[in-house]
Image 1: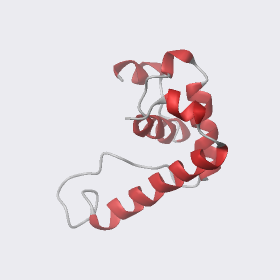
Image 2: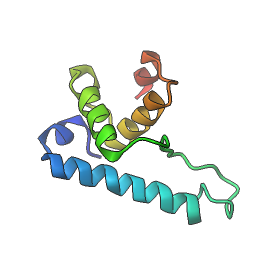
Image 3: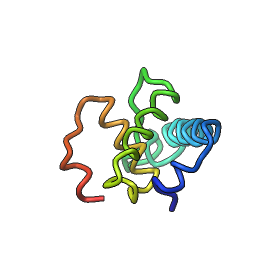
Length: 97
């Protein structure tokens, strides 16, 4: 699974494309996947409303600028950003990755 090493090597356009794909996946999941009303399970992935893909890219860049975070898989990095943008993040949340 891709992590901060891959992310730091991506071009800006690739980073934006990855985040936009995550947005699409989250919206699809909400409509027909495990997070939809058609399922009794909750989605393991959520986004924070009101923030752009560019803001997510900036948050992920900041996360991976710390060498301690470089091995966090990209899906967890996006979840981290959702939590951080929602104001619910503490540093201890990252320690279990």
